[in-house]
Image (cartoon, rainbow, N blue to C red; front, side, top):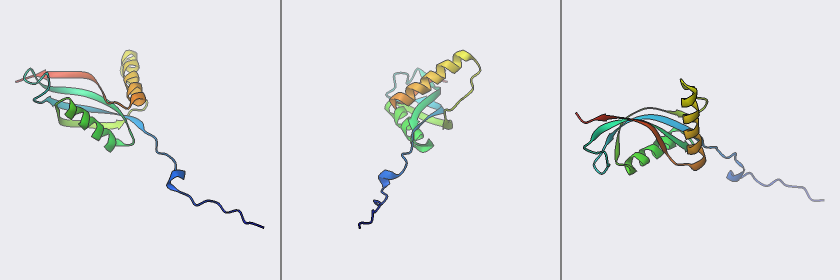
Length: 119
């Protein structure tokens, strides 16, 4: 008679951590190399991205800003985008849609730029 042995557990058996959509409010500057450099000082923008955690989300946002020649002044927050209540139904539909795009593509989406002019 043979005893049935269970195979040893491997890392492959561990539950797969799921990505989530995160969003951030970022104050930025237009750096040399940006089309807006010298025209506008910078601004504030929402960034949406799919990531495993806040650290990865921030890393992806920083990389996107670097690719666009934007400097980051302040990141006000990075949090999971989950049932965020907006003031109007129009805003709710818009930002839920942007979050869905970020979730389905894995790309960083920047939306609702508010820029300020050079002093």
